[in-house]
Length: 160
Image 1: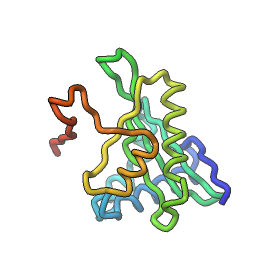
Image 2: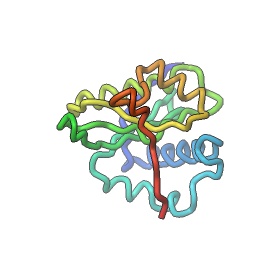
Image 3: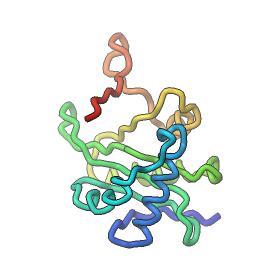
Image 4: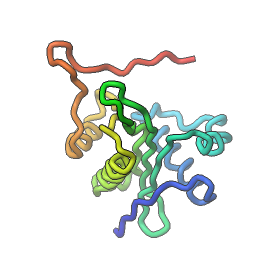
């Protein structure tokens, strides 16, 4: 395998198609909800995402085949007074996992964050996704804790 991690160019029809395909692959996985992308996302995600400032993404490819995807969004740390980069989605095709593709995508995100002057990378992971947790630990990620007495930070949501 000759792996190349390339910045995602959503204006390129091949990149856009690979993006939707990989994101749908992730959404069909139990760790991605199991249902696949909905019609609204399939129809509008690429166009709408191109208009979002602070989006950074990459594809991991072997030749012309896209094997993995990482989607990141620029945020801001008020405590550090510097930007941060949040890894929002990381997907590797199920039949290609365990070959370093996820680590290559995480390394790309770290390089990108450093180029942007970020103070840190953040991400969310389901508590029972042991494989992803192990991969993130290998890449240097740890639970977010300000004071051990206060415990770990939790991600909450309110769906509309």
